Length: 314
Ligand code: ASP
Image 1 (cartoon, rainbow, N blue to C red):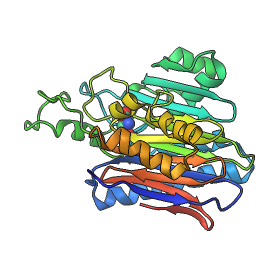
Image 2 (image 1 turned 180 degrees about the vertical axis):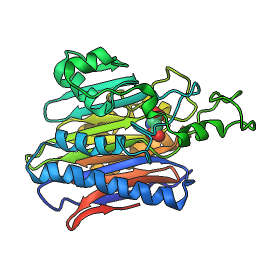
Image 3 (image 1 turned 90 degrees about the vertical axis):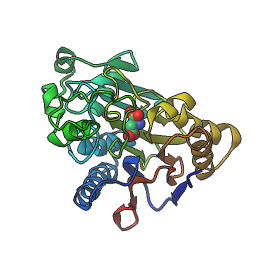
Image 4 (image 1 turned 120 degrees about the horizontal axis):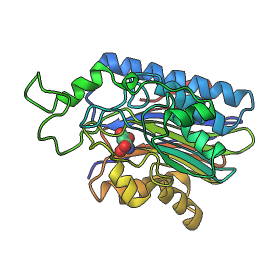
């Protein structure tokens, strides 16, 4: 059974913020690791600026995730993992714990920032989850749209082709049946100075996933959750998060058993990921500002604000 690595960050100021850049095996080279660390710092700085100006936790997690969506070093927005057809189908979700509201998009292909499209679903429609909002809808809600090819990078095409022995093979690797999972999905959790909690997650899914596959990220309670007690953002093989409603499982343990956040996170990862053979991790925030960052995968890119400014943990 893989060990669970868990960090608890006690409350240390008026607000708290943690981000992740995906969980999976340790296989990225040093150059990419440097780029990813810089990306996490930039995301923390963006969220920090919002929270320091007494902005909302919701604004902070959206700002942090939007930065990571624009960063090719992560599997979200531009540079997202590609489907078996070589297309980018992006999932994102936001949860506003104080308002008990959520919004999400699945298989989004046109929104430059899927996290902002998810927020628009929450704030501008009577719905919670929309599949692939189109260009007209994005225009109507005033969000930036791009051609779907904008998300597809040479590095991600190479990663997709890596499953075949034929270097001239098209983007569809023959015989690929198992999606490959790696670092990249991004997420943020925050508690603001008014005590409100929020979570946001954004992803391209897993490399080589079937076109049309939707992971845990946009499913409220699976990959993303926030209420008045906890905010959770997950990363890993989404099917395990979906089967167990993992993010909500963390919240339910806090709510119904009175467990502290660290115990709730550890037990949820153990029961929902480790026992069934899954892989991944979560970042979580509690109402008192405590942050917990934990994973059972070999690694999880993650960072949090500390008393002396942004601290990228690993
Ligand atoms: N959870 C994401 C998904 O399954 C992938 C990841 O976090 O790496 O879509």
